[in-house]
Length: 413
Image (tube, rainbow, N blue to C red):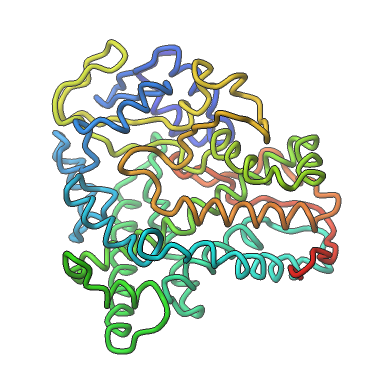
């Protein structure tokens, strides 16, 4: 089959449960031009070079296709992940000040106890049940509770935020043969509504500050002055969505992988100190973000012997690069103790994931709690039903038959 249809086949929901044979096909060619004029790059060293290449833009406004630019325009300014330096650097640094080092170095580590408590409460809710949906019962509520606490979003508003987020993520679906314009319009409306809600919440924090990140962002002038209101709206929208969506997939993909590989699951039960290493391997083996579709060359560039013209859509296939046998030994094997594991689970370069430390901590705590407290967990269906998005790939539901035992871990009940 022609490599010019690879993107179409990757986007096809029929391949959502196992896209890895398609990624192997892509790696055989290194760089593949598609029927729509876009280019896919799936080999590790080429992806790494492009992620660090200043000639590669993250700003869709550099695309040569005006329809693509209009499709991604919703009247709001782009968030910092969708602009280039120096604007990206300024916005990212301002957003980082209340989130992590050097200005707030202890914020993430201080969440450990709260994370353990939230995970324990959610698993306590499994008692008396012999079947759970890991997504709805655990993997979604844990990170969304954490990001809402961090930002200062009232608990009663969480259902509205989930509805907006689901619509935004659904708008990323590019399944062939389906009309995408309606989904894109719905995604635009949902993003706008979420941004307006968060902007109004920021206005309230400006008048009545609390101990949360929204208050910190509103009142932190910093050396360059505060974020403008519209910058604050788009930044908070990004933090709200990215602050839980990818972690849902990381936890769910992680548990699915362990249930498919009982030897690895039992090893982690015996050697819980391996959990940080296991999470890194999960980020390589089943990354929650499969590709970066929004890169654009600012000039003609050569990649793997192929010339990619200025303005052409460039897809960096992170999940493919993570299984490149030229970089990783036995890449299709899950090894919870793998060494030399410089994966692209959080990207790389100046646009590496803002929330990586939080996602790592959430996944480590979540998976450790599940392994400790679920007895005899078994998959109800394999493969499970997947979400439609080929970009943020993960099960929509993950039904597990199990029983729940009390938590005997000291100080973690």
